[in-house]
Image (cartoon, rainbow, N blue to C red):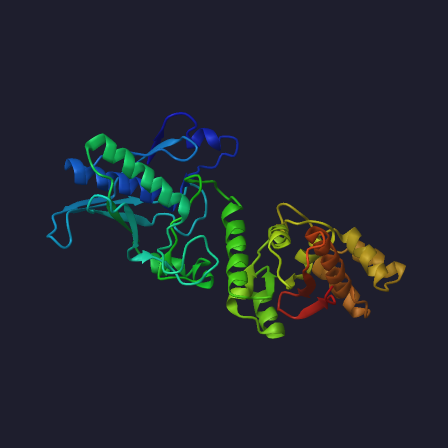
Length: 378
């Protein structure tokens, strides 16, 4: 794929050295534009150029195309497909083939969206789409509508069409996403707010956290858990037997969970994760990724003193190679450093919540999933 016009993707991330890519929504819009143009003119534009919400004008090569002459029931249709290029982002949908089939509808019918094979259907409330709707998000829908209108104006169409979006192998790819937990079944979501995938961006993960909170609240869940990974999820399930839609895949984004729940409260929030990660939260870090925050052993030595360690033990904690070594040193002397970290992490969480009516507790685990520290709810 290539891009024309000002503000090209190379210029946008030139300072990072990483190549950006395109969202599934941008790919579906390009395919829709090509298919509808072919219905009205008999020719597929290739490459096909679209305009993104912020004015960029990328061009997409077509990977597949087909004009289909229908009968009175099916009508004339055209299908076009674009291979998603996620750039240098480790996106599970990279290289997926996004297809749209556009069918002419009677004047006045408007634009109707359908989920084809590999695109999911919304089955739970709390998402920005009604239950039963195809999982094609509002911004991609609007982008497709605007391009349909432009093609209609250019080539004499009415703009009344049915757009069916499909993704080859989408149901299989979706198993590696949040979709099943959010109640999006049968395939992927067609996503994107800007049309551009920024490599290693946090935005998609944080958006999934927010949608997870929305779905839990819509389902009437009063207790949710932010977990740093699968091991901490298993720990929370053993402790509280929460339903799957009450589990938030927090990853390293503790701040994203807390800030969103501050605006959209639930009665109780449990945070569960590895001792070292949660020691960062205890020290005031809201992004727990190793590239953006480090375990502070000097801070841990102060917590060890608060938990009952003597000065020699605190010195050994400060000199430890890792947070886990600091924990083991204290465990060997019966000093509950894990509990102290959990309490301090809870206090930091409450500070971010700024008085929101949310009860918080924290569970620290080791790499095997053994609970090594807990706070009391507060």
